[in-house]
Length: 158
Image (cartoon, rainbow, N blue to C red; front, side, top):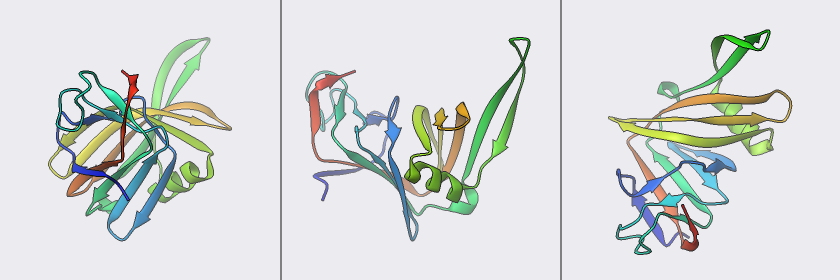
């Protein structure tokens, strides 16, 4: 189905400002779908445009995904008389996260991404239909991450 399926390494792609439209879990694979694609960095074998460009619809797969070792947190800022007084962190069950994204109740947009041994760490913003905006952090425990897309969009430069 996908023309390109590449194991993630630094220097290939970025999820900055990319929105997850749906989530799928099958056996030990977690798949995130991006209707507006993700960024392919410039001057790689997958992008000869000379600039970082967006893909069309794309997918990220976390292979050998361990849900028990993965975590999702929401951060809420609290104010008193318009002055920020503290931030609280709440752990959210991953199954609830999948359901909220798939139902359209939550919109998740990635801002930063980091890779460690069997870990991917993402920060971003979450918009809910009822409760407003939050920041989130998600730790995904997996063996590897694969990036899947068909074509790049030379007209959608960073």
